[in-house]
Length: 575
Image (tube, rainbow, N blue to C red):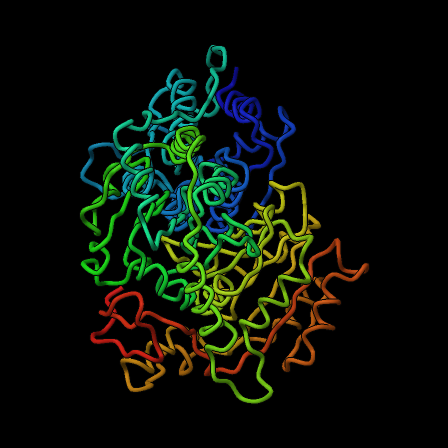
């Protein structure tokens, strides 16, 4: 069998339904084989970074590796930001890059390049992948692809890259039987630790569960909810875990972190017991003052030992797949009774009433309040399968105020924080869920990074609802300049501009609309989901006052409980 035919057949037999790519000479054989030999849908994007982001969302949606292909040289290097996004946010992905023929590679020669577009993508991608493979002979192909696929999904999921020279793609090999791929489970919980954990839960007066991306990565959100209900412990979530517990669930507190809900940050900060499930406890989740957190009992469950007792010390480590852990814990507590911490529950309710998200901002009289808008958008978008937020102020407004049901997902670029993520990622999500409606929340800055993918949405007839929160500047950085640079707005207001996205959407053949005042929101949301527009893409441009800030915000250098604008930072942010 021709190698490229084997690759195409391998992907189809593993259950891959879509691959994302931008065509180039060094992947022409693989694309031709996918077209001739399989029923896999080839989704041609307009930038390789977009293909990588689409693969990221496909992997998050299905649990299978999202697959993106790119040619050698600039095609391969354009994948790198998306590869990093998959790596930091635990998205299973398989990146296949074409490479120049083996006889055109420079090898050990002291030259920069021999073949046209020859680039050592393996060395570049190695730090941000779980594994990279440089194929050197056709016989290696079956074993490498099997290993790569399994590596992407086992343990903590992530990206794997395979670089395949063009002459190998057109070679022929004997075809082995395909092996089966399955996610490996980590070792069982230590019984002594489990007994200690149960006792500490019962003894705690102010317990919380901190749920991270690991919950969704393990497809364990149902078990999380079952645990929270059984032990009567409220749940706070990280940015990447906004969707792990329904918005209206009584055990849900809210979203914590640098721009977290103020009431949730205070509750998290004043807790006396924390069960951390699949979260890294990075600086945006805890603030810079880690010592503040080490004053309480913390059990940290993660499938990677190095993530535990990394920044925050003194945690009881449980190195285990979080889904297996939740199953084990639920089994262990089957016959236990856990009391409701009534005073703690009432206190959290008081905090929520005192610090509502929709009253954090001081705005001009007729300005649209973005937090209010997010609540309204959520209520009108019950049929949406996934909400995607790009990176910036709108991302935090969405995380603070989005209302998700039990079967709705929330995707954003967390660890990489890559502007331009949401639009191409929405394509991967929509296709993974068989063209169910998707909502994108993006900003005017982010929209301009991968705006070309509007054409991909049109060509594939995807019902993606694109909300552009247009504050006519790079608002989060502008707020940073207000805090630390005496409002010198270089490259945020000064030297920056944005087009009219309604007009651009119409040019792409997508219905567009613009709103400027609160009174226009209801009719605009009705328009998005009207019978005429329900099954097609639309663009709604929401004009936001340029000086709208993102509050609350941790006062940098202070504990997570102290947030701007009521508290002031004690030093300049370093991250």
